[in-house]
Structures are given as C-alpha cells and as structure tokens.
Image (tube, rainbow, N blue to C red; front, top):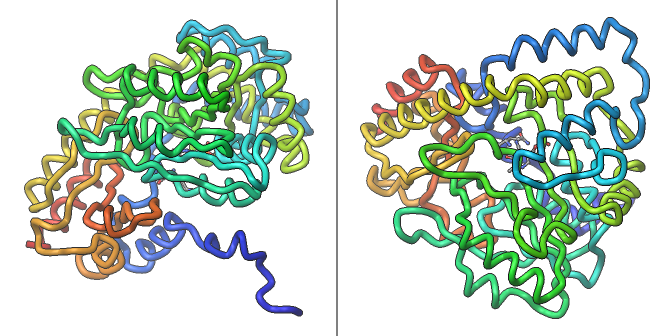
Length: 387
Ligand code: PMP
Ligand code: GLN
C-alpha cells in the first residue's frame, strides 16, 4: 500500500483530545474532568419513552429528515426564541450536532472558500472544514472586562472576498463565554454586508448561568434566511451518547444540508427520536433544574480550583471552566494535562489544542463540572496536592 494512506488534508486529525484524555484517565484511575459528559442520567420520562419505542417496534429506518413528531417538537421548541420553522421543509434531524456541522460545511463550502471560526474552537470544526475542502480562518477571543469577548475588529478584518461562512458557537466551548447581543449584532451585520452564511452551534443553549441569556443568531434582523441553526439533545437532557441533533434553516439551506447528510448516515437513532420529541415537549422543567444544578457545580468546582491555586476564569454557560495554570508555577497547561492523571489522579483538557495559536493559549486548562458533587470534591482534594 502506498504511504501515507491518510489524505494530507486529514493528517492533522488522527486523534481527538477527548478520547486521548479519557483513555489516560482510565489508565490511571483518574477523576475525569476532561471529556465533557454527565455522570447521571436524563429525565426518567425520556428514558421511558425510549424504552417504549424500542419495544414498540420503532427499530427500522426513520424517515430521512427525521421522525415527524420530533421535527414538530423541534419546531415548537424553537418558538421559544420567536422563530417559526416549518417542520416539513425547514428542519432536519441529524446524528448529533457533529454531523449537522459537518454536513453543513460539506454542503455549503468547498475548495477556495474560507470559513471563519472563533478561536478556541470545538475540535470537530477544523476537521469538518478540512473534509469540506475549504480553509479555516480563525479569529481569537480576547480577555476583556472579565470575560472572553469577541474581538469584532479582528472578525471584520478576517472577512475576505473568499469568505463563505462563519461558524459561531455560543454558549462557547471551551471558554464558557456566552456572546452578548452586541457581539451577535456585529456578527449579523458582517454576514448581511458580505452575504455570508452563518452556521451556529447552540448545543449548550439551555446551560446558561446567572443573568446570561442565550440569543440565537437567527433571531437577529436579516439572519433568519442565512443561518443554519444547529443544536442537539445531548447536553440539554444528559444523553450525550444518543447523538440526536438537528438543523433549523430556510428550505434551501436545509435541502442543501440534507443532500450531504443523507449520504453520510442517511438516518440514525430511530427509537431515540420519539424520546427526544417527548423531552422537548415535556422535560424542559427538568432541563431548568439541570441548569440550576450545573450553576452550583460551576461554583463548587471554581471555588475548589481557586483553593487549589489556579486562577479561575469566569464561565457563563456550558459544562466547562477554564483556569490559568501559571500561579502554580506551570507554563504549559498541555504538559500539565498530560502528567496530571498520573501525578494527582485528575484529567483535564488543555485549551491550546483547540487553537491555531498554541503560544497564546497555552496557560489555560479546561475542567468539566457536569459531574456529581462527590466527584468534583474528590478532584479538588486531589488537585490540592499540586501546591
Ligand atoms: N459542539 C460543541 C460545542 C460541543 O461541545 C459538542 C460536544 N459535546 C458538540 C458540538 C457535539 O454535539 P453532539 O454530541 O450532539 O454531536
Ligand atoms: N463535547 C465534549 C467536550 O467538549 C466531548 C465530545 C467528544 O468527546 N467528542 O468535552
């Protein structure tokens, strides 16, 4: 066989930090605050609905766009933001947000196009842009006024005549920032002026804390028709392994994304789709309780990390809190992350792996707080040994 077998555009993507860190955590019996997944189940009513579907014969291919009751429930859910989508032509069910993002990029961008991504970026974005054959242009968040903020000037400067799309994730993984209305208005203005497509990753839409509010970009003037709004059930209902996601967009954009999606997986998660429909219709109060409990967990972990000697950055949403490792005498959070499971028995994820500018981000380490309180407390106890 000719070597190397992997095509050059995918060679940077042979492993994921989440799989690597989870494997390391398992090897050293470390508390895993690396990969973001909850350690408790979602609402019992949703699990019951899945069981009923599984034993009720819903085990063959669902319709290509997704089961009608799920598309209808997604449309009803989206109305909470004031935007109406036609479940038949404007909604597509996908294998998680990950497939929705990849299919959108593959369908809407190609070689010669540039896609703007905000740094640090969720790891699948770079790989998906590469699969599409397009090029990523990164715009870094900046620490300003006690939060990670969008640098609107840099964003404006990143737009070229080749820019086709911009990928916006809010609430933002890994920083936990939630974009403000002013930031989103600036993104919208650029999209309208330069006729760009916006792809939004809103998987943490329900997980916002204090007085932060999730504002979908598609609700801003001029954006409804040019935005591919993406979300999924995993974070809202503690079912990250189900991989039920969705796209809401204009009929033209949904048809385009479907053209790619239907030849990637065609369909997935048949018996889980009615359960997610149930959850969207009936379990949002459960998700509200989850939000409150995650806010407490954020505070619990943040206080523990500060006590252990890290400089903790604020987080307004998601599962994650970032810390600066320099007060403990470390320079590079990635070096620390690799040693941490063996040295103290905790796993975390270095932020620099989500960037094209590792030097600028190397002091930050991301911890997940979507864990039981005793797990968080155990991690903190172990981390105190770093001093
Ligand atoms: N986007 C972001 C920002 C995420 O953190 C995650 C992961 N958990 C995903 C997308 C993937 O979502 P899904 O599991 O629905 O594919
Ligand atoms: N989204 C989760 C995180 O950011 C992990 C998802 C994955 O393992 N691919 O930690």
